[in-house]
Image 1 (cartoon, rainbow, N blue to C red):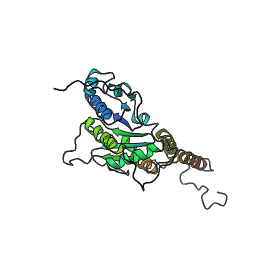
Image 2: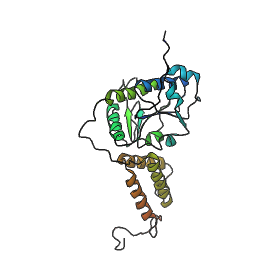
Image 3: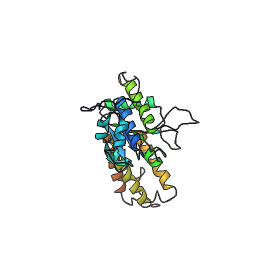
Image 4: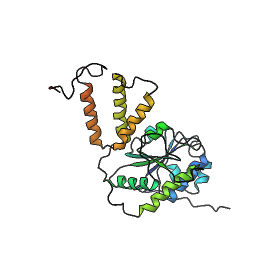
Length: 270
């Protein structure tokens, strides 16, 4: 028989990654995920289209005292809005996906998160729905995929178990200094909404000029394009420069006309 736990308070949340649960189906899993988070010093939970509405008695019972995490949890309509203010996003998944995106261990993800947060960045970990996991378009929004090193013949994890694996790595590494020799993080990293704003604009211009004219190939081309830019992890100034480059290209004579000659690097006036 489990003894009751006193409710924990989160009056001054620590600087730690944000946990984003995408389409969680069971209130009990939300509660146990909150419990796992607070066990490891993680306090910010975001929910994307949860099946239940908070407050929920089932979630509260399963949280076993971590009610403060549930009370402060934000609810979002989609993953894009849930990570809009983030600078670095990791997608957890039981297996690797067939897409051009870095695949790193939980330990490496936590190391990168700590380095980014030490430079003022905001970091999130995405967790998919219990039955289906994250969709490919949701994984595309992340900077890297984080599969868990479990039995490949049986890699089914409960949602709270997955959250605990990330939280445990965070708690275990939190007291240790970052490893030397890794690429330093630059200040003013672009937020996801800034990067998405540029990529959405770029897609619109590519649609306009006919580059994405094949409907069957368009989804894969867009995912690869986004993965390419996300691997660069641009800062805010680089995004502004990219916008300027795009503006310069589309405002040139004949811009957007497929098959027409347009000034290029060999044009003496370019």
